[in-house]
Image (cartoon, rainbow, N blue to C red; front, side, top):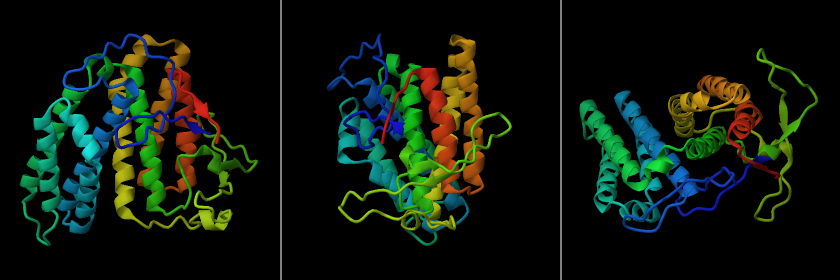
Length: 313
């Protein structure tokens, strides 16, 4: 089972799904069509991914790792597709142009073996990118949507799927970590100190979409959990921290003040699970352990607190 998808027009497939109709949205067109709540949630997730990739460029350049810095700069620039530029330009063309220029400059800064900029120059450039992205969010997303906790939760859920994707790529797992059906119970129901289920899951077989024969369990898993791609691991680390920051600073406090005692508990459960997620990724835990935290601890509590739904499959 996984969070249901919402169709949208921005580049990242929204990996959370149908929510109860969001009443009270009075979106208005400034220079283009009205953006729906799910489009805005997806856009918020994209902004945070861009910030995470820029931060990784900054950190790797500071440690003189030009190869990793270049990888992250390329990932950031690849996110800025024509569709995204058009979406930003509908509200403010200058900001669209500024972001394209800044991300291109970030990429150029990683192309020389010695680097074309000093560490302080890179710090300024990343700060500029963050400032541009903040301006874009203000211009692109209407205030009633930006301040809505449900939209923020949808953005968090999409970021969690990006954590899973990048972590899976980092360890070359060979299966879709965002799909909860890849996990099957092995019959040992252990619990952690908080009483939550921490059962070990094995991988189910999966039919390849290109018509190949079913993949075996051995084919699907990197059984030794060997790190294959450090760039993707760093992205997963940065995004997990982004999720924790967004949830604790923008969602948790406002939701605790408005919810019931039961809702407060589920929100506190999410916060605790996010701490474990960050710690586990930093410790290079097995991909299945990361799936366990997100699919059995974070997703269920988000659904309970904010009315999200699951689909089978």
